[in-house]
Image (cartoon, rainbow, N blue to C red; front, top):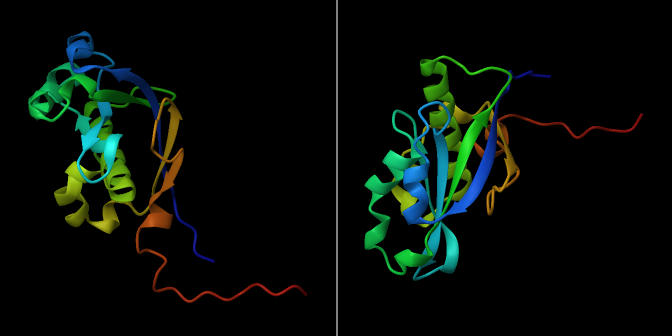
Length: 166
């Protein structure tokens, strides 16, 4: 039996926020992580997951407005959820950036938001195959638990025997 070391990333989600409320998300200590954008999409309808992004070197309040959600249909009804990473201690800047990047990639790969199409097609399975995210609080349409082992191709080519009762 093969054992795998799982990299667990816990995310505490908060929201919803309106675009006009983003300036309050500029705390230089805690306002970094992953974010979700919900709104109207012509094929999928109203109030659906449109985009998953990351605020790594910039706070949520600085990064999200750069996406120009004001220019979309029905921008008054855009809802934003922000996810801050949880853990026993704050990691160093490099580790924090890596965890934000891995969590964003896995969540995009599994949930396939409409405006992340390019990111889904260019994902490299190896980077996220041992990542496991746990989503807490207001995670909205995301799955509460996402495993790279389950969603990547790591186990696809392995032979499996059915267990037999002895």
